[in-house]
Length: 361
Image (cartoon, rainbow, N blue to C red; front, top):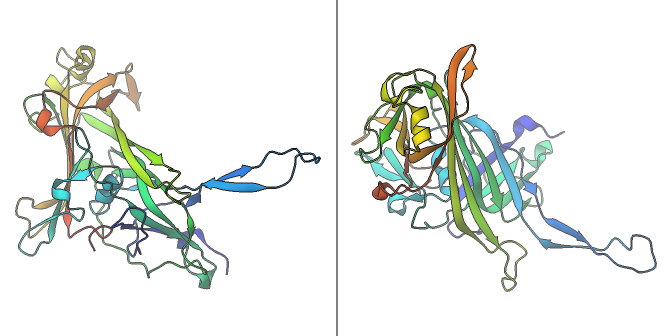
């Protein structure tokens, strides 16, 4: 029986030791490409009396990649993508901190590195299209980390997420190419873009102190680009990278503003966002989306996804339009703000029901 694209799926499992394969069971609810084996093949150049020499080759280096195509972002499956990207956790709990009478509410406080480097949270990935019974073939990739994570949203849609992952190597899971476990689909809730609230607050006032006038934000994108130094030592006995060292993280984004001068947080006006770009005024960006009610929450009564970062506008191009309506599309970056030292580079908070299937189950 031929293999079929519709039977493909991708699974994650956090590793207890970086590079030590785990057996994933829960399926990623989204679109994923298959694992790309990126091993390096070298041809040996030689002069042996034959044009082009012989077909002698060797493989000095192994690596693999997997792209997660854009799909709906959910409260349940975002935390692990941030952990793969070098974020730390409040208290080091990768499964989330439980709240409520029976621990049904779980809070992830995810922190981008500023002055501290957090432990590296790597994952085993399995990807394929079924089992040998339908000519499927599945492969695995250990020590998987995220190099680029993008969250975006626009009105009338769910938030979207896409990611680029890198691992030590790609190989068949076993001789017949079947998954390690029977797959389980977790329950998830997509995050509705229109349910969001945005704040652009003055530095010193605290995150969430100045709400943007409702209707001013039409679309946004935030990109987390993490730099990993993949170390290939000569004394490890491995052709894979032995360690991946976090060395940097670039946080950038775009916000599409309704082009109006509605108070301090409109696009125009003496105190508007374009003037803040001209003056290079730092601000504290907060964006929050809430989902279904949580019956046993103590601090939180709903699922939640909150992003908080200090930002400065980097580019403010000329006025554009959306179906004839004036808009302003600003580009920002987020670095450490000296006037907000306790917050570092901000926080990402995710509240969901139960611990992470990929990291806690």
